[in-house]
Amino acid sequence: MRIPNLIKNPEFIPLLLLCLIMLQSCNTKTASTEATLRFNSVIPKPVSSVLEGNKFTLTEETNIVFEGNEEVQQVASYLSDKLKPATGFDFNYNSSTGEAPKNSILLTTTGADGSLGDEGYELTVSASSIKLTANKPAGLFFGIQTLAQLLPAKIESDSIQDEAWEIATGTIRDSPVYSWRGSMLDMARHFLSVEEVKHYIDLISLYKMNVLHLHLTDDQGWRIEIKSWPNLTVHGGTTQVGGGKGGFYTQEQYKEIVAYAQSRFITIVPEIDMPSHINAALASYGELNPGIVVPKEGRMEIAIQGELGKDKPTQLYTGTEVGFSTLSLNKPATFKFVEDVIRELSAITPGPYIHIGGDEAKVTKKDDYIEFINRFQKIVEANGKIMVGWEEIGQAEINSKSIAQFWDKEAWTEMAASKGARILMSPSKNIYLDMKYDTASRIGYKWAAYIEVDSAYKWKPEKKIPSVPKESIIGVEAPLWGETLKNFDDVEYLSFPRIPGAAEIGWTPSENRSWNEYKIRLGNQAKRFKVLGIDYYRSPKVPWVD
Ligand code: TNX
Image (cartoon, rainbow, N blue to C red):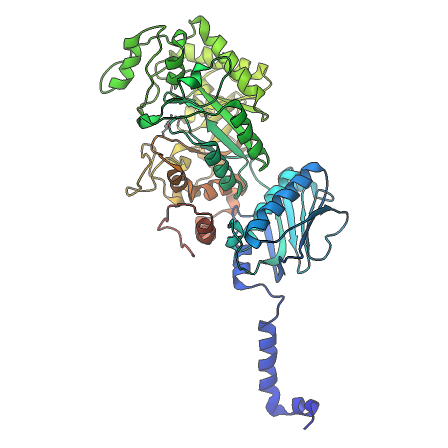
């Protein structure tokens, strides 16, 4: 019997159907279940993602092409560096014009939709090529973070992996709701090395955060070299909470951190905490010490400052009390010191912001406090920068350029907003990464709240303080205070998995977010956390998929 006749035979129809089904399931173009899942699990959740369902596979022949300026070329180079270790492929990147050539990833700043803004992007994955379009290089960079999440988790590995580098086809259009999406590290309480800070930058950049605030000074340590006041680090940098050896960054090292952050579109915001939280400076320069005597009850270590008296250096402090030290308006050295520090710091900080702290000035008279902040604002602005301070600065005559960081008291934040200042949202009950998850957490504090992964996610920045309008809010920042952190594993344990949630709160409009949907996407990040070696808290609230 000839074959066409065989096909015509009704008895063979079931067999024929079976063959067709088998052919379909072996269709080399259809995306795998995993690739589809990845497409639907991106964090932060994109504004719109439309899955098509075929696949693009990264191979040795895939090229990276770019269209745009030198900064676009640098993003292309970043992409090539990011994809190489795990795939082992040598991606060349060349400039090009027009559409993406077959089997290529095109990065372009031509023809982007204006509504995507400065940080938005459009990512189109077809079976034959990938096209990433944005108005600005920052948008391309954030689009690359999405692309990385569409690839298998092993793409984050630093050694060659045997893996089919499949990406589901479809289109993602995306842009952030807030322009400040950050985290803060407190190296004053426990020092962190340059390498550790860079690693943290890499981790937060995976979720499109764009600010890293460095809490560089506090009672326990001064961590940034100030050339005109060398003892700040020579002496004030030599210890930390618990009495370890501390450390500091030379200006060169600080510049290295800033440049590394810049290459990941992250702005460094340096903080010099004043007029309180200043003991490390008072211990380094006696002429700054007003010799305030504070009550002794239960605060032995604090009392030392007063006992040593005016104009003499205080002792270095390794405890964890807050708010006991202060600068004085009446000392001739005070503003020479402040001006020198802000001037040197501004000169090595390309970003627009200088954070002056301003929190918990418990032994500074209220009128003096206000005078301090007013003068800090002038000094910061004279150095061409924008002043950022904790919510307490709302009590001073701050102007509409300044930014107040809400952490606890609504009233001061409202005062700041009513003066036209922008508000950075860091509500301690929701987003303080140093708060324990629950009673079993091995490190962390609980003074604000236990913050499980769900309550860290569920709040809405624009609903937090009813009288602060959404337009006043510049964004969201997740601070990680360092008193209880001894090493980088501790940093990871408290920040993951709350960092992806904080990043999503800053990126995705509240009306597009829901915990029940988010927790599934977060659970799908477990593989990525594992490849990245992140020592994360395995919350029972999240359906982890390993
Ligand atoms: C309060 S929040 C502080 C920090 C502490 C932190 C510990 C804020 C502006 N100040 O000095 O490290 O609590 O959770």
